[in-house]
Image 1 (tube, rainbow, N blue to C red):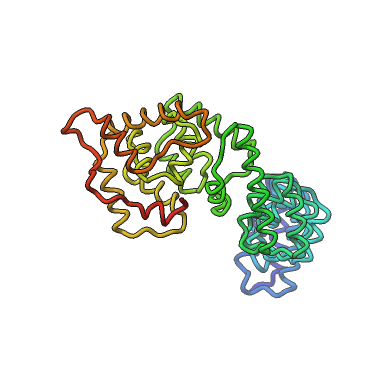
Image 2: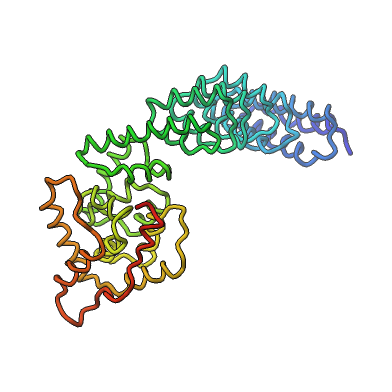
Length: 401
């Protein structure tokens, strides 16, 4: 093949035009040639290409360098000296190579992480894999969003020292605590400490909202890592949910998405606003009470069978329900009319109001639910819950109750 040097000399003759647009086109053509001749290049050819691309790029505006960085970030044979310079450039230029280039070594990343600001640290934290020496620097120098990003990165490795520093910083950062609690590589003693902090934060939030929380329900939230620990964010999210429900803008599909993502706070609050029951009652129905209570809440809102099924699965966590139990629960849901569900729901609201001064929740056992349903049934031929059907008690017994 024609030598890389002679090809580059021909291209450089085009750069006599000093206009920015012309020189930017020269840079593109040089980069194209670099890609086209990659398999035939010697190490010296790669260095030569790098020198020319670097010289042209750094005579141009930042947009040209950002374009070059984006083109080189996936190339394993990209000129190392050029990639390192791009990685230390402004973040618009550095971001692609910091996030994806395999040319950068751990030593390069450590040096950049020690000398650059939060935006560069954030880009490094997104790399598919990170070694402990790199994460040690990020943990020490990083601030909120950077720490959450690197902690959430499943490909990041942490030293014991790094994990302990994260745990200390998580004392004042709910999002970081949430991300840290989801890692599978935490030492058992540290996991217990984090779970205790999670419990304290949730209880503090409940106290502020004057909501009593059952400790077994709280254990579910913690063990499933379902609670969003950005408590201020939860308050804001709940306020937005309430406004959207009032404006009839909240869809059933969004509730399914909340539940599937284990965002129990949003799930509970959305159901609370939709039904008029308080958060504590909804949480009880969702996690502990007889499954018929959950069915009444869903049917009163005319939810699809699949939505009811999703909430049953959330209620039972990692426990796998037998097909017969699931079929029985779904059959009962099919046989419950929307009208009767709404009447029974109104009865539950009255009970909650009457018992509002009592710390105990109303008895939502199957017998009481049947009694309320029968008393409120408007017509003998209305669709109703089959009283002869065996109660799916195992749904509660195998779940979190």
